Figure 1 (cartoon, rainbow, N blue to C red):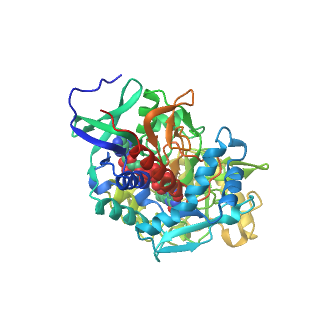
Figure 2 (figure 1 turned 180 degrees about the vertical axis):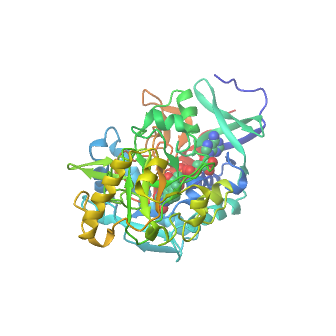
Figure 3 (figure 1 turned 90 degrees about the vertical axis):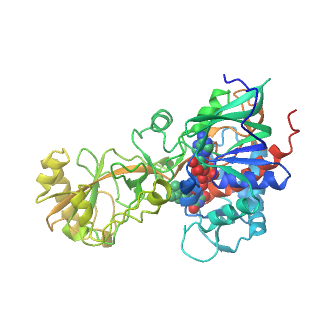
Length: 486
Ligand SMILES: Cc1cc2nc3c(=O)[nH]c(=O)nc-3n(C[C@H](O)[C@H](O)[C@H](O)COP(=O)(O)OP(=O)(O)OC[C@H]3O[C@@H](n4cnc5c(N)ncnc54)[C@H](O)[C@@H]3O)c2cc1C
């Protein structure tokens, strides 16, 4: 247990931990309610923004509150567990209110339909909002929030990671952070809002909390290492939704780079993906084996997280190699790690680097990846026999998506599961208060964003950013409304 210090290095009314969409929203709201706010960000300034910055910047906006509640309940399905009616009500109302709030910040709303589970009741309320015309991503929504934080002159301490929460008589009084190896004692006169993201970059938590993912890497920030979960449990916070993730998605991880890359599949078809046993495991696709619902697949009438073998290898021939770049843009590497890499158009540079292995025959390729040559040859031969007839009898790839793998040389590209984001963390209530294991609020401790997200099962795209705004406002407003400590 950490003691309150005799003197503080930094003092504020509201201390916000983590500068993504949730932290920015909590900071703006607390500031506008009259509180002095300090925003802490573990990453250096150039890599700020967490998953928020590199996200597609799309916001799920329900245009009907009653339908939103029905859709929420249907998405949660058997995982409604103890998400209270009050919590669902507040989520739906605040998600609806997001649009007006964003417009107040200068949103140029571009609205379109992107319904991830159209078969569920209430789904027709789902609209997606972008800020301004342009491609998905491009940080436009993120820049809107950054401009609002900067316009308010909110003090932001970069390179400053919160480590432990401080309490006196059970009440949160501040926290211990580290910057440049030094401890900083930070006083929160009214409250602390934890908005420091999930545990996508914490391998130990991944192995402890997520089934079947001994190795899975972030598609976003490498700075989300589950610190809010550790700080919360240290003071008795309850956890929820720890086993729910957006993902895993089929991705590529380069050696020495902490995050992974979206896979890019050119429209060429002489390719399969196999597990360590040399067998195909499903219909090959860019992210997800047979749907694109943030890693969830329908199995025997039930939605489940897709099960990806590890390791996985994409096996292809020369025609596929030369059809187009297999690595997506490297924005997330550059923005979040400083590593800029331009993937070659014909993948030749990646073959040179050894990221893609090359051999003159399928049997020799099997040798390079430690597989039984006869099994891999048989897998390729079976796929080829179907492809020659324009069929995929095993997994039902469409006729225009199959072509025999015959034009050597042949290639194997190791693939990995990657996360969009995790959803678990300290349990919160409708007032964005963090709850302890007795479900009682921990005084003056709030949270928002993907750290302890409300989403327990299926996920409507854009829902996380929507939740950042919804609960970020609640956390900021309620923390600012606390009576200042003496
Ligand atoms: C590639 C990609 C695309 C996505 N697209 C979408 C989309 O279009 N729509 C959608 O709704 N969701 C999307 N998501 C998910 C969504 O972006 C995130 O769930 C959401 O942005 C999380 O926001 P946040 O503020 O909770 O956390 P983050 O934005 O991740 O911010 C958390 C911040 O806390 C900091 N931090 C961590 N530990 C500490 C500490 N100890 N002290 C201080 N700071 C700390 C981190 O450095 C980070 O900056 C996407 C995610 C990815 C990776």
